[in-house]
Image (cartoon, rainbow, N blue to C red):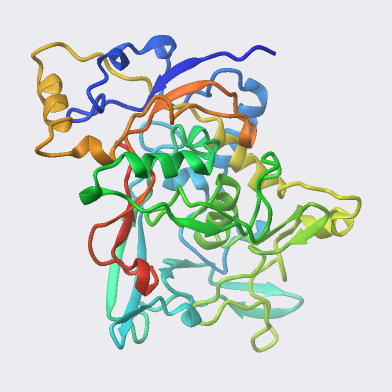
Length: 383
């Protein structure tokens, strides 16, 4: 199969339609006529539609929802413009300072506070109660809210080799240079042979750049935002990194309290590893829902760029964006030799895209969810 180059630009905004003064990228190329929420070229339409349906589907108590959670579906938080967009839901975070060092209060379920509990339920004749996270969390002194970010084009970002992020950092002026944030892989993507459990990869997703790949992003959100625990198979080994329930203001545990399980599905909700005979025979596969979420996000196209008319407000904004005085484009980058997709993660290679980000972390002020060494670092958002 020949390598096809397709130019796709992330959504143009009034101030940042094209970065780094690359006038040639005003041409929207093959993205003309594209619709927000489309799949990237070469994606199997049937598989994408099924994955999109799964991403938007609401889960219930019988599916393992909860015991505490924030929403019933992925699409409920990612819906602006299209399924997979940004959202209006505010994720709540909390923590405290101990001797000047940020404490995420993980022993109480921090730093994420789940907003809803499934309430009362009956299992085996026991009348059980999920409880809810206290607001404010006992002992917390720092609080913050975050909006869900859009997912358009992130599969292209996921396919980028680590070394290209090092190159980006080297190109940035020292005064604004970002830090390449390498994080441990808890759940490798089976479609990327270079990933393995416990290895490091550049963290490119999440507000803090703390997530290494879209499969891990999916499993993490499934358990923390929806309360649905999963196991997967990694090279024939059961991976249960996301198989433990959150409990209201308690340490995460599957232990029984007063004889009651965590929710209506005791233990791991979707124990894929057990279903496949503990991954015998070298099975290397994500749990099916997590795999669908990952496929949808990985193949969700970047929005088409908008044409910019010379002398327009957008044109003046672009000039300011690229100016040496503001240096916006120093971090919100469009380097066409860097942002070219590979087949890692299962997407089509050769797609050139312009995310207006370096996906590096920068010192931007106090955080409520990071270690002391990274407390003020935030990932550059895509424009």
